[in-house]
Amino acid sequence: MGQRTLLVGLAHPDDEVGAAGTILAQRARGDRVVIVWLTRGEMTEAFGGIPQDEVAAIRLEHGRLAGELLGCETRFLDLPDCGVESTAANARRVAELITDIRPDGILTWGDAWARGMRHPDHQATGRIFRDAVTLARIAKVVAPRTPHRAPAPVFTYRGAHSTLPAVAVDVEPYLEGIFALGQFYLQRIGFGERTWLEERLRANGAPFGLRYAEAYDAWESAPGVVPALLPAVLANDEHIHPDRRGEIVP
Image 1 (cartoon, helix red, strand yellow):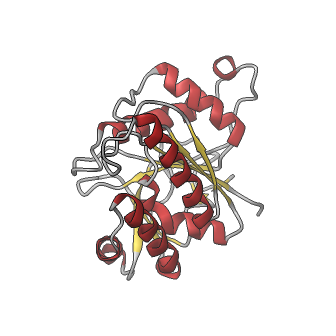
Image 2 (cartoon, helix red, strand yellow; image 1 turned 60 degrees about the vertical axis):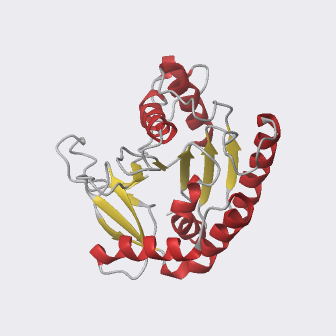
Image 3 (cartoon, one colour; image 1 turned 90 degrees about the vertical axis):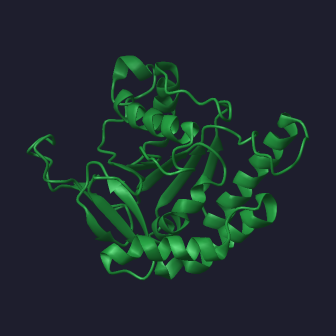
């Protein structure tokens, strides 16, 4: 059915640890995955008091190496760490990027209440990417670029109190790669302990009868257990045009 493209839109390098298995599952299908970080993560305190531009350079390299571990493309924008704002200008900027990448699905941050997930950069990043999906469809917004009007269902990191439909990716085949990425960041910024990752994956899998899973909010697609986010099946939702409900995208 052709190669798919999954766009993973995040705030900081290391945010992708929560989707490592999903990225690896998509790559195992032979699909393209592009991670875009809106910031360079320069506000981390993992490197003491060195200047922020030096931290940014280190984090850029982290992102590049993480992409190699996951087998995916990586890009950075230059929004300020701890200063990402969900503005029309930022959404337009990401919309232009979407017309370049032309994804078949988008994974990003959602609305959450737990510490860490509720980081204001995470919340703003999710809103920016979700807004940009629509703006990328509008010719007068992205001109002279070609609009991206193909369906690109949105998936977001799932918070503990989410009431949205859930989709779970069975990531047991990719544990080695998940733990490798965790170890990569653990050695560099002190984040990504194997025990924590394993507990999180087991907790996500339990409601779905899986040993290990990464779970997301399914904004437009059918819920349930899947081997990969793409291809996705559009939900039978009254807000989706009747000609497209239940359709496999793209």
